[in-house]
Image (tube, rainbow, N blue to C red; front, top):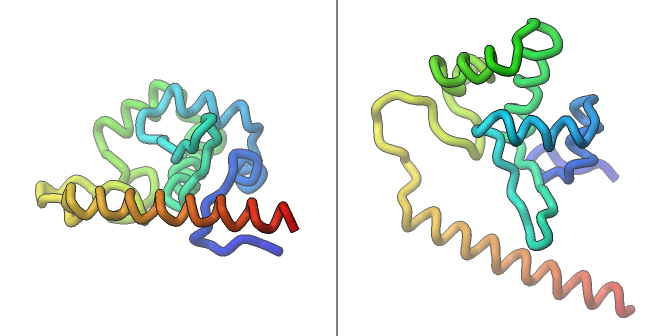
Length: 133
């Protein structure tokens, strides 16, 4: 069964979707500070839909448009995420630089992180129960 468009992807799923090797994604994380997948205990990566959009843009810039790594880094510094995605805002990612304050407050971020932790703990309990059955 295929995952939904908003589902998080493992590194192997992201690599398959983008048509690159897993080690390439890990390498890009070291070169591009804006690529920050969620990491769980043990360092397992989960890519959000916004991460997949950014990775696809990086792949396009490097492989199709002929940019170098330094060129992509410079483009990001000068243009922000707008040039990468062709959108004003990347879903689940930082807003484009407009001078306006971020709509997501620190308190909201903490609440969302706590809710995510609760959901992950519930999933772990369910997985354990299903595994014991």
